[in-house]
Length: 218
Image (cartoon, rainbow, N blue to C red; front, side, top):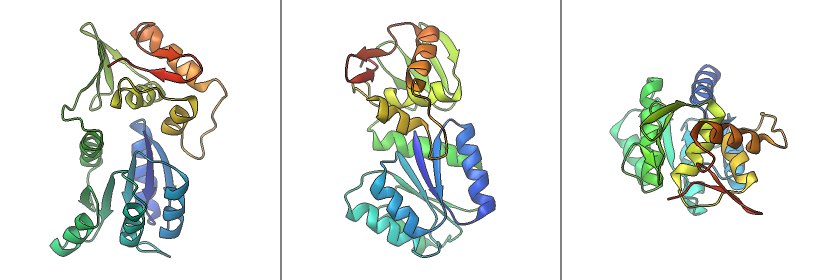
């Protein structure tokens, strides 16, 4: 899952980016509102973590741009502004959640999981397809009552597929969901990860649709 982090504080930005990378998210980090608005027009993100007090362009104006352009990507505001009025303003402008600094990384992860579930119309915290389950809180896959530990990239790719079972994802879509701007992507990276997942979960776990991409069954 690819996340845009919009945060101008270096210490907070580095800490959040590292925590998200450790949790298998691909993260693009920008430090001002103008770059954030530009990034959102060029890329499709699964989630935006948005500070309000940004240089060059206020975070609330960035949020207005997102919704004005009919972008449905979920947005969690992360800010030190903790007044009720600020929270109401952010939510009324289209934010999906509001997290006040300082916050725990565990709470951030939990809120991300909840917002992403809601955005995909999923109520159960454990994702499921015809014979697989994936628990985002533990990052473990399960098949036939057998649990499997996944690498960061294996989890990221399987999570993308299992958020929308039955949907075919192209190579570029999968690459964009699991790699950030500064990560080098090998030409056969997606195939390599899928091969590793099939080795653990079974050859039929991920289906190849010739000339189109990959999917998991509903």
